[in-house]
Length: 233
Image (cartoon, rainbow, N blue to C red; front, side):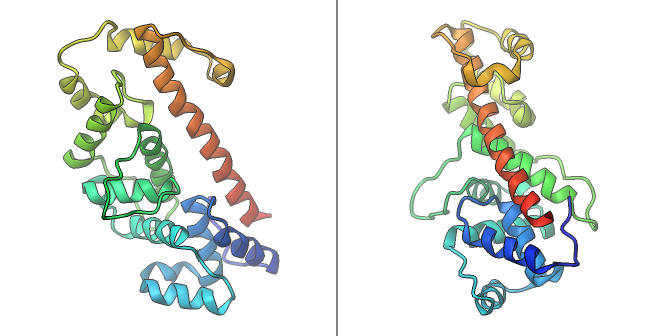
């Protein structure tokens, strides 16, 4: 979904509003700047972007600046798929977290899942780009460690590129197998998840992990659609 280059005053106002909203998605912020400044803004220095927006009377918060830079960088240099710092920092920005180099900010499985989803959508929307790259060793290992520390046996669908590494970390075994979790998860009706309760059995614990990620994705996707719809009205 691309924003039309023919921008009406209503579209410009919608872009202004999105950039002032700290709950806006990274893609929403990216397209809002694209609406106001044109696609060439991706090649500008950050200060040029902020100065141009400031002249329009749009003050962009630190959080939304992080989102804009993370999104625009991803469309030019896709280090998200191969370099762990870019992977983590982009994930944090895409999940409304200001990056702080002075503290450890390990992303959660849900945050990683949304970042992977949004990054692939954003990358594929660019006319001058091919399909997103495959994940390299560093992001794969980072993702597997995050999942392992959170107690996952089966990776969420969008993070299945880390399943083999996760299996290696879970080599001591568990009271339920990855196959059992996979079959039970596929049998669940996703539309029923908001009202679904899970017990403390080993299988249900794993299903609860996956359900929490799925519900977070649904919530983020609703916001994503609202942001882009606002720019297209």
